[in-house]
Amino acid sequence: MRAEIGKIIVGQTDLLELLLTAVLADGHVLLEGVPGVAKTLMAKLLARTLAVPFSRIQFTPDLMPADVLGTSIFRQNTGEFEFRRGPIFASVVLIDEINRAPAKTQSALFEVMEERTVTQDGTTYAMQEPFLVLATQNPVEQEGTYRLPEAQLDRFLFKLHVGYPTLAEEVQILQGHHAGFGGASLDSVQAILSAADLGALRAQVRQQRVEPNILEYIAKLVGQTRAHKALYLGASPRASLALLNGAKALAALRGRDFVTPEDVQFLAPSVLRHRILLTPEREMEGSTPDEVVQQIVQSVEVPR
Image (cartoon, rainbow, N blue to C red):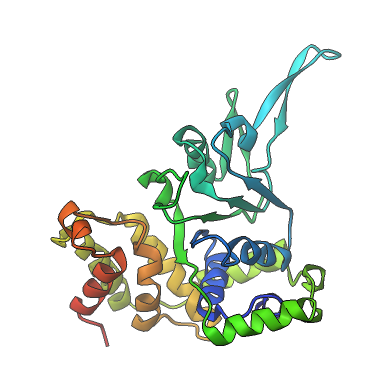
């Protein structure tokens, strides 16, 4: 999958590793970055490497919940209502610019992201496996964006920052475009895993060995977010589970059948940055959630 995505995307090796970790850990991903840094392209390429149904939803200020989940239509020939499924009914769902839709539409995603079901007119519809939401958003300071509710942010396994390329990478991008995408188009990216393959890999990841002292380390890290003086809101037990599942998947990706403290430390910013809120004083001082997470990681004793 790395090789296939690497045909189009230049650099971004850590970001790609985290995306593959989320796929293996069965978690949703929020990609944040300024316009034009290939967030949507990265999500589309990841979807292309999986041989599963894919849909894309462009979030806009006038989007309604029914546009996402589906709606009931009256059939005159039968005299009954029939549920017409919305674009959320796919295995990989790309939600582009998720923070441009108002709270009403955001709330439509709460049930489906956590429980993998959609309840409409008293009937509950289960999503097929796998079910993965890849959402992109522009930074909150940008024009026309809404801040996502904490309850929704908490449903994302990772929030990943997509940064600018380095000078060398940008030169490589320009050379590729000048040569006509360097000979590679989106169609050249092949599907690598089927739904059954991914299910088998995820079952393998769940069997990873995790020592009791690593579990305690995860609990201490997350616990520190609730006691830190710079934080107004700490992380919930869902963050502890996200760190555990993510660390198991990362260890497997790195060729190990056991989790190390380094796996947990590598994932801590991605798991915690969207689940904590700084106090107003710290925000005014210019602190960032990542800085606070780094302080917490440095303050908690590493098990050996």
